[in-house]
Image 1: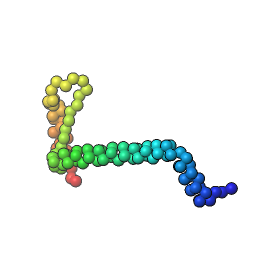
Image 2: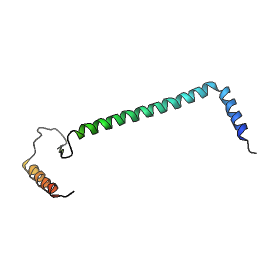
Image 3: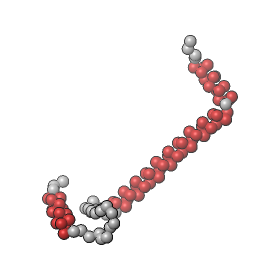
Image 4: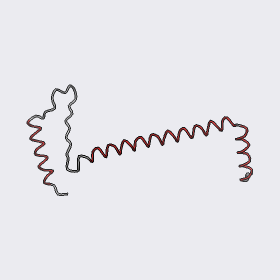
Length: 98
């Protein structure tokens, strides 16, 4: 026993009319969910574009080096060994051909 498309549509409309509050709340939930999703995407795209614009101001020939130690940070200076290693790595990078 297969129902026709017309019977299915009539049954769906009857159910919507009989359960107006449930139908309204379902539509409201879908609208709120889609709005929240679009808002989050818009905020993330804005942050992404802002960070890209900020980093592009430095140019493509800028190298950022950060030193992070676990625990208490007393100074931001490199040790002589770290400086030597860094200079050696920078020379190797400069020798690479792109």
